[in-house]
Every structure is written in C-alpha cells, then in structure tokens.
Image 1: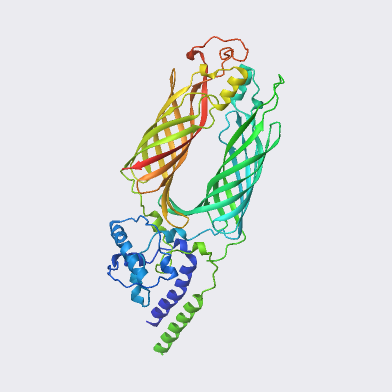
Image 2: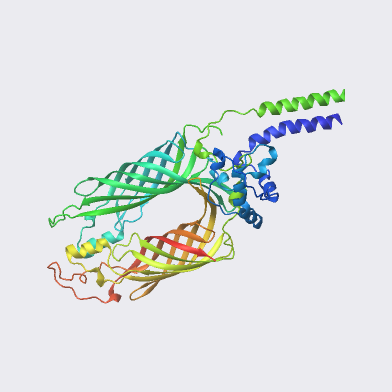
Length: 298
Length: 245
C-alpha cells in the first residue's frame, strides 16, 4: 500500500513537472474552461445600474467574431447583452466572473508564437521577376529588418538578379532584326522600407499541424541598377508577404515586391535615341528568415 | 508511521510544485495583450482548426480580373468568372472562363510606334476555359490589427483545358498557388498565381508585320495559320471575389 502511494505521489510530482516542461503553451489542449462557460452562459439580467466603466471594460468594444457551432451561435446572440451587463457592473466576487464578456477567438490568435519586438530579422531567399516577357531574371534577395514592435519595423533590402534572354527575345532578334537588350531590365535593387505587419494568424496544415504566421506590407524606396542610359535610377518599392514560424528563431517567408522606376533605353545600333519610359518589376521570393537575439520567455 | 510518511510526501509534493510554479517576471508587449475580459488566457490550437467557413459540400461563384504578366505582345489583361464545388475541406473542383481584352501590350505598342511593326497582324489569345482542381492544404485564421478574425485558405491549383486564339484552339495546363481571405463566412477575396503552359503561335514572323507607318515597306497581311507554333509559358496573376453558397 505504501509503495503504491509513494509511487503515485512520485509519479504525480515528477510527471506533472515533466509534462509541463514538454508541452509548450501553443501545444497544450485547453482545459475546457471555454466549454464550461458556454454551456453555462450567463443569463441576461436587465439592470438600470450605471457605473463608471473601468479601462478593462471599455476595451471590450470589439467587433463581433464568427463562432463555430450552433451553441456558439446562441452564445454570440447573447454576447451583446452580456457585454452590456459586464460594462455596467464591476467584478467584485468570484461569481461575478459570469458577467464578463464571452470568450472570443481573437485572444487565441493574438498570442504570438514568434515574437518580433526588438529583434532583428535576416531574410535570405532565391527569387525571380515574374513580369518580364523578354528576360528570365533569377536571383536572390537579402533583407535585414529591425522590429521596433510586433507591428512596425525598418527594413533594408538588397536584390540581385541575373539576366538571360527568353525565347521570345531571340525570336524578335532573329526574325525582326530588333535588339531586345534595349528593353530596360533590372540588375539589382537596394532600398529601405517601413515594415508593417498588421495581420497575425495561425494556419493548420491538413487540419493537423498548426503554423503561426504574420502577414506584412512594406513601403519604401531605393535605387535600381539597370541596363538603361542612366544606370542607377531612383525606385519606389512596395511589397507584401507572409512569415510562417518554424520556431522562435526561424521562419519560412515569401515576399512579393513591386518596384517602379523611370529609365531611358540605350541607343540602338542604328543610333536612334532611346526613349524614357516607366518600368515596373514584380519580384517573387521565398526563403528563410532568421530572428535574433533569442526570444524572451513568455 | 504510515501517516507520517504520507504527510511528508504530501508536504514535499506541495513544496516541489510551489517552487516549480514560481513565476518569473515576463515582459510582454502591450499590443500582444488581449482586449477581452476572459478567463486566464490560454492558447487553444483546436480553435484554429474549428472552421468558421463551412465549405464542405458547398458551391462558390466568383468573378475575377487578371494579368498575363509575361505576355510580350498581346494585351495582358483579362476578365472572367469561375464556379467551384467543394467536395470537402481539402478538395474542390471547378471551371473558369477568362476573356482576354483586345489590343497590344505596352512593349508591342512601342515597337509599333518606333519600328512600324504591327503585331495586330499576329493571332492573339481570345479566351481561356479550364477545369480547375484545388488542394486546400492550409486553413487558418488571422487577426487584423488585433481586432477581428479573417479566415483564410491556401491551396495549390491544377488546371487543364483549352486556350482559344482567334483562329485556333490549343490544349493548356496551368499550375499555381492561391489564397482566399474570407471577409464573412461566404464572401472571399481570391488570389491566384498561375503558370500556364500551352502551344501558341509565334507572333514574330518575318516579313509580315511592317505596316509602313515608320517609312518601312508595307508587308502583305498574313494568314493566321501561317504563323509557326511552339510551347509557350506565361505567368498569370488573378484577383477575384467569390461567394460561397
């Protein structure tokens, strides 16, 4: 009997600690507090009592979020009334917790698995220009970002591209005696951007593994090295992409960037003067991002 | 004796748990804090799997616009419509029709203005009709500025069908990647990046394109069938709105 009790207690103490260490918060199944709350949704109590709203209460003013089941739908219907009650009454006793706003999925999605605040991000990726009909532009992109907050950062980016003629360029040279190299193309781009990541989410792969991700936008400018008369030309840049966390220090990231510049094509063999035009590049890259220093525990 | 041993073990267990559970000060950015009054915050991955968008067994209809990003000669823009049936959360199949606008690309217009080469004489793509299979491997939820939830799916697309030029049709294949953003349970923004492969006439035929506008000789107008053909690859970006019924 003693041995059984000792074994049980030892297992309880050691096993609990091991379990807690092995499971990160993101992997833990929820003790069904949410379910308990939904099945015992608070009744709407009509009250005319008006008290001053606390800061916490005032921050509950969020848009409605869709929920999953019929039961959740019913809870959602009563959510507005429940919030009204919660706003009007302060929590003073444990039983008053029933008057709080119902659980909503925003809190689940908001929790950051891969924190970025006050961290650097190094992004290295192969890529290509997706809108060049005459040339195949393959290359690589290297970005260095400092994240001031989870949402905002400053990014320096460098793009380096090769240029090889596509079949159509050879055909227009051979059949129509034209010079496709007169079409302006980009050799490299260096610039700086404001990095803005307003969207955070989690995505499940085949309804199994869950991957947290950020969706971001970049706005900025820089200079492009081209085969134009000017050579280096000032360039506007905007981009968007997603960062899928693989760990707290590494992520898969794709980026779709648009660059815009004006440049003058070089004179042809005939000596005809080049014309100045606007050019746009759409560059798709996909690769790995590394975050440092180490994320603080949370 | 037994009682003493049990008391000791229980006390030891409580002390051990208490020590291990001693909380450290954590520095959490304010924008990560939830804005709800809820029970102690927990993370529930299952909620990500719980689908707000129930597309299994549903049909969606949409309209879209697109750009043939690597089209050198013809106008790159097109418009179309699609209809899809979702067998389940993972697989869907549909058809789409895209009509190309007439005219020339910016480069082709430049060649016409500068060198008198009129690529309107070459056959151009008229429309595309394809069956489209989507493998929706990823389903997720995202928070826009921490104030609401948008549902999203990321999928691979595999399409087969035909492209119709003004004079002839050719079989075509397309592979791509796409993403839907559900603003509501039914309405979604649909983005597709597709790589098309199909046989197509080569527009750069010698001795048939000069229209005489730049002082060049006027070439005879060619027959569309006289243009040689080869395998052609184009990159297409499509953006549309779909409604799930």
